[in-house]
Amino acid sequence: MAVANIRGLHAHVGETVTVRGWVVTTRSSGKIAFVVMRDGSGYVQGVLSKKEVPDVTWATFSTLTHEASVAVTGTVRAEPRSPGGCELAVQSIEVLGSSPDFPISPKEHGTTFLFEHRHLWLRSRRQAAIARVRHEVAQAIRDFFYQRDFVLVDTPILTGAIGEEAGNLFATEYFDLGKAYLAQTGQLYVEAAAAALGKVYCFGPTFRAEKSKTRRHLTEFWMVEPEVAFNDSDANMRLQEEFVGYLVGRTLERRQEELKELERDLAPLHRVQPPFPRISYTDAVASLNALGSDMAWGNDLGGDDETLLAQKLGPCNGAKSSTLRMGLGESYAVEWAWSTTTDFSSPDRRLISSSCLRRIRGGWLLEACVYRIASSD
Image (cartoon, rainbow, N blue to C red):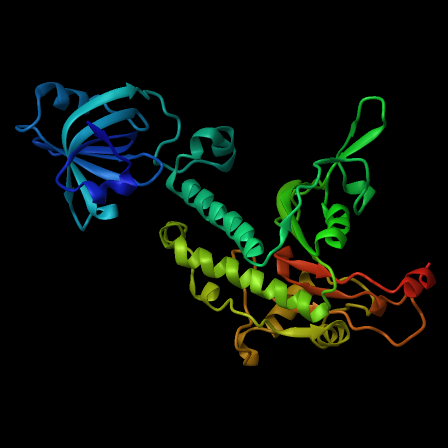
């Protein structure tokens, strides 16, 4: 007997196959019964007629419970109303593993309960959809840079150097050699690699010892960090705009089912197309002050400042494409302008190519002039 996955059932219409998976729901009207099952590739409905199946099959159906592991054999038939366009005319059911006390039922559960049963919660439609969207974005990140001749550099997770702020690192004893830290950035490594390979990036787990429950602070996440030798600010921002546009466009193209399951409003995502609005740091401060912010020139932009700028640079300004929403917020770009002053401690001496609300993306242009670096000490 051929074994098929649910996603590929359309290629087996008219054939008898076995599908192995887990029970999602069952229902019966007395003479006709239905079992919906999933196998990780999709969902399919099996239909049983009491007068057409053996008594043992009908009896086995009556024992099925939520998330029982089963092997269902039946004839594949086209059914446009069913998910995937097919259903199974069931002939036999084999219970591979019963599930009499599965703790997550269709009723509402609290967040604490669901996290305590996280390994089982992953089986839900919503969690599976999130996983597939994340998978698509991760693969798109790698494809984007591969197509542009970037070289992937796998940077260490345990490092002996502090990349940014010492207070934000998880530390551990590294045998008798002193402290080691969970990496908060791969930046130091890819900066060195860029001088060897020209265009590089790292993409991996990142750790920040920030005890917070806000959406802006995560103790563990995956971060992508590209480095390009000889890129100026405009090229840097252009790369980032293309990057975000590519990720959103590809996800919209390939993950329609999952986005529908997540009940996402897709209209803002369709507007994510370069170029994004840009504004100089000095103009940004002036705009914020005009909007009522007490932002002082020379300070970093805070979350409220980012929100105000995003609103100002929104669709109402007539820009071809000005918003970015990935469940996080609006997109905007901020460019730090080079100063003609000889005060090398001035914030205008720094150049940040772009940033956007809730840290979707950000970038920096490193100083290349030895004289300026030496003079800034």
